Amino acid sequence: MDEMTIRVAIRATARISFVLFLGAFLANALYSLVPAAATRWLKANKDRFTLGFAASHTVHLAFILTLVAAIGREHAFKGTMVVPFTTGFLFIYALTAGVLFRRRLSLSSQLEALAHYYLMALFAVSFTRHAIARPLFYTPFVLIAITALGVRIAAAVCSRRAQVLGENS
Image (cartoon, rainbow, N blue to C red):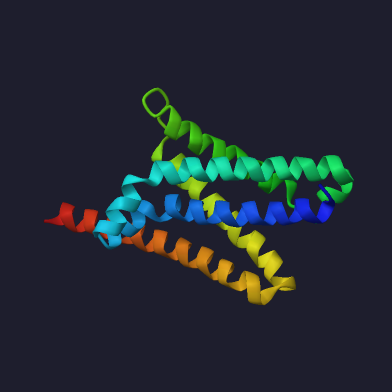
């Protein structure tokens, strides 16, 4: 595989991963804001979206490592935020472990929320960096990521308000 083909595969797997992650990230929030058949289905399949995201991003990682082998570490990671991306992969696999070993390993809801917000912020930053060079293509991805963050925050605020109102009744 030549460098250009590998880079196309890296971008394609990142976009596929983003779509799958959106399902996992928004499932509970959308259901709490709009309890309907479609959002119930999304919530019921949240774990599948998480596992699909992890699988897709593992393929993404394999293409990154293929690029490193093809052109060298210095050139492959030029302009890349290595530490945030490495942390992102750790969060992905923590979420995956939480799904696969739920009965034996219980991730705290705070850790899961941190992982979700971190990964969505990472997608938003990455897409924003790409939007500088290709605004027509990447701006919708940026807007979707920011909107997803807003939806998730809105659902959390509504949930807290409902709890406070319930306690005051």
